Amino acid sequence: MPKPTEAALDLQVGMEYYITDCGGVGGRLRSSPEDFVVEEVLLNGSVVSSKAAVDIKPKPGPYTWIIIEKRRIDTISLVVTLSRRLGVKLSDISYGGLKDTGAVAAQVISIRGITPAQLEGLDLGPRARIIASFSMDRPFTPGEIWGNQFTIIIRGITGDESLFNCVVEQIMERGLPSYYGYQRFGLRRPNSHIIGKLIIMGDFEGAVEELVAKPYPYEDDAIKKARELAGKGEYSKALELLPRSIRYLPERLVLKQLSIDPGNYMNALSKLPMNLLRLYIEAYQSYLFNKALSTRIGKGISINRAVEGDLVVLLDEHGLPTGNVIKAYGSMIDKVNLIISKGKATVVGHLVGYRSKFNNGIQGEIELSILKAEGVEPSDFKVSSMPKLATGGGVRWLSVKPIIHLISVNGDNAKLVFRLPKGNYATTLLREFIKPNKPELDF
Image 1 (cartoon, rainbow, N blue to C red):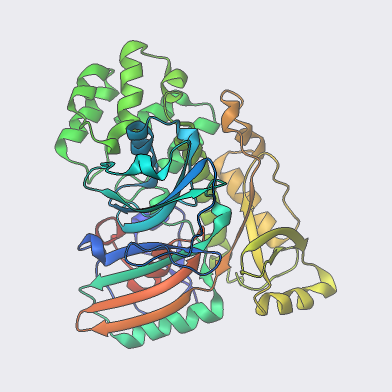
Image 2: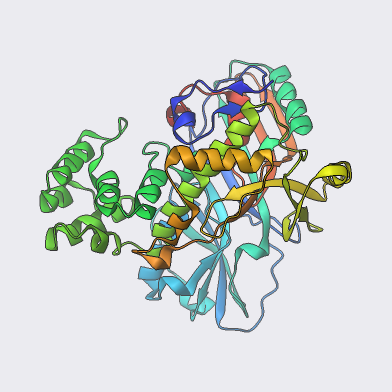
């Protein structure tokens, strides 16, 4: 039976259950940056690594692909740094996915209008370095990658190898829930989805207050003081206290605008990069998805087999979702589940948007009940006051089957090497092993 979580953070981001009922091994992640390594896996199976050559064939064209290694910096901040150092527009830079902020990550980023020669000697600071570069005829996009390979060290475990085996066995049988992980919402400030909801509801003052003025328990005293000043409308003083690091760039941009034009909250938010504003909306979609998935798990309904009314997406030759969606009902359910068992299809749930149409099955009923409890309508995602943020919605698989290459236990440490398809989070698998009470401290 699924196991309810005891972690407050899990509940805040909608992850209410574990799919496994095994005990947790305990332990802690990220004792050092090298304990959490993320490497992109391309469609051809090649791993993007800082330690080995990658199978990328250069082609003449206006783009340069770079293999970049980053440490404890988020992808968007890295892209902003590249934009500033190279003098190119943010729209000229593209990437396949957002990599974990607290990791050593190797990924491909493409830049239009820059040649490999122009990157020679480029200083990106202590947290990023360029490994290689290639001229290319197209931008690098999510369509270029299969997923990610993770090499993880868990330190200070209290459980033994039998608990790892128990979790693996149950996940292979039941499927790993495709929850959006902690990084989507923030570990120490889990509020990206809250900001997103306030934006789609047109409460821009509330969104600004959540972004700049609300303190969270694990923040430094100086940061809490800055947020207190921002809450009192003393924006210039708050701006002086906030560090000039890229980590606080969103707050600094908003506070700078408010110090010039206090009270114009929508205009202050508009100073943020469009990609970041979209991330807030997407974080709220992710929260709704997590809540619906949790409800299904809590009701004891399979997440890797279709039931009456479920939506099912066919998978391509790489095991990734296609655009072909079918509805399972009546006598065809057995045939659909046979296709699912062969790894050629998967059950999906909605990422809510203004185009979302809910089916009559149990999953649709769950999703509608979540929206009703939230006081939200699909049409709210048109974001009428900021129409560039409108999102039509989509679907996401409810479960995946991780590819586990290695689990090695040595004393009170464990090393794991595994792969997940793109869009899935290592922490959703790791939490099944660790079952943390305070993931904000241990993850």
